[in-house]
Amino acid sequence: MTETIESGSTPPSPTRRFSALRLLLPYFRKYRGLLLGWIGFLALSSAATLSLPLAVRVMIDHGFAHADPATINRSFLGLFVVAVVLAIATAARYFCVALLGERVVADLRRKLYAHLLTLDQAFYERTRVGELISRLGSDTELVQTTVSSSMSIALRSVVTAIGGAIMLVTTSPRLAGYAALVIPLVILPIVLAGRRQQKLARATQDRVADAAAVANETLNAVYAVQAYAREPVEMARYDGAITRSVATARRRIGQRAGLTALVILLVFGAITLALWAGARSVMGGSLDAGVLSQFVLYAVISAGSVGGLTEVWSEISRAGGAMERIGELLATSADIVSPAQPVTLAQPVRGEIRFDNVEFRYPTRPDAPTLHDFDLRVAQGETVALVGPSGAGKSTVFHLLLRFYDPQRGRISIDGVDLRALAVPELRGAIALVPQDTVIFGASAGDNIRFGNANADDGAVIAAAQAAEAHDFIVMQPEGYATHLGERGVRLSGGQQQRIAIARALLKDSPILLLDEATSNLDAQSEASIQHALERLMHGRTTLVIAHRLATVQKADRIVVLDAGRIVAQGTHAELLRDGGLYAELARLQFAA
Image 1: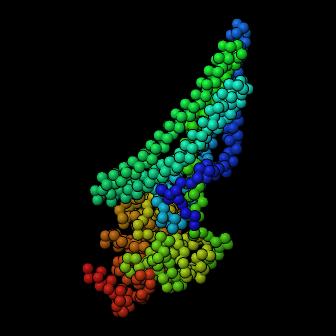
Image 2: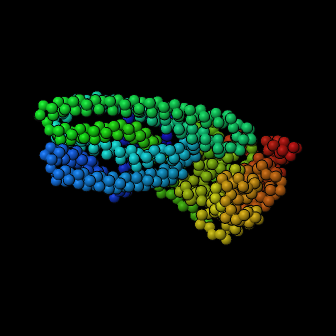
């Protein structure tokens, strides 16, 4: 798997950074009309800008010098026409490039978000979600600003500067030669400072991502933060991240300000030298005043273009860094993918599960096997409970069955088909999960249940809710099934959230069911209601249950006891109590309490 670059890593070379902007080319090609309109109107507005000094020269040399009113009238009319063309072309250019930027970045965000959803659990195990939110938000926003504004200004500045330089040489080669003496002195600091700007830009974006990660982590756990009165600590932690971000940005801004001042000084120093020589030529009669005026205007236009280029150089550099980091995410591939030619499960799916000599280590803990020499067979329609101390490997069995990870050794199969031979959507479509920590989305009650089957109609949603014993509390909500449940289900109790999760699983109607501590942390009344709903859900399905509370699994067809990643015993509740061992000890501790 391609690794993403973490915060604080060594910045890449400037060439690589700017080449990252080429990743935008496929998005530009999709909107050729807007792209051609931008370039065309840019050329027209630049041509209009460069024609202004010519009109001024004609006006001075042929109008003022010869006191010809007709020439003056034509000159001013020409200036007005040029102004109209410039205004229309500039407005059209802005419209094209701004809309182009919006559409390009919208497509980029869609692609990045869709790609992030395809990455496996190993990626999310080592990557902070706050950083990913920063990539989707601030990094793409920076790219949008660059495409919509900075890149347009830079291209306009380059075109105008080149055109102005050509016209300077055409107007007076000798004066242009004086100005050209300073060009190397202007280019050198831009190149040298640009490299430093790129490093500082990357560092600034890293620090912003760090702050976003801290905020995301804290706000997602605000209940615990407030319960432990850690607001001052978390404020200080976020303040530290912001302070580091500002300090890095200050170095970048300070260098950019110094570069801008130096370039302006050098450019206008060159213009001053050329004008001094030109003024002496006019006084000596070897140069017309109109020619000098034309040269002055072209010099000002060229200098302004160079100054504008230095202003946006830093933004383009930052966008290059942002696009590079986005490119790194897009280049990150998942280990868990569907095979090129997947096998299809025979229908109807029986739901027979087998683990054969499985050994597994989490990518972040390669030296500590979580499961080893693990063999388990679950028959069609059988309910098997997995019990054991924390860290025994119970949740890992679920992770492997859902193919969030692949084992380093051994084979896992459903109905005799290796999971790695199945298309991932088909595999996970055959499994319904009721997790310990129910995820409630910021949507309506009906939409939260429909998460189990997006195509289900209202009747199916209501039937699932009734079977999960969730219908009564849902219809008591202000808007019934249309009631917004709040972010993370803050408007529901723990038992109500669990019943929503059970309704999802019922609506999904998969042949294999995974219950991960589905009745944990509930009061006796809620547990009794949910237990009834679970019995309806488990009926006719192959079911694996994880439970620490042994009272909830006594009716299981078989109880499998895990310890340190191995199966140490299995049987019914009565058989395991009779045989003694770890299960009997766990039962003694729980039931004695």
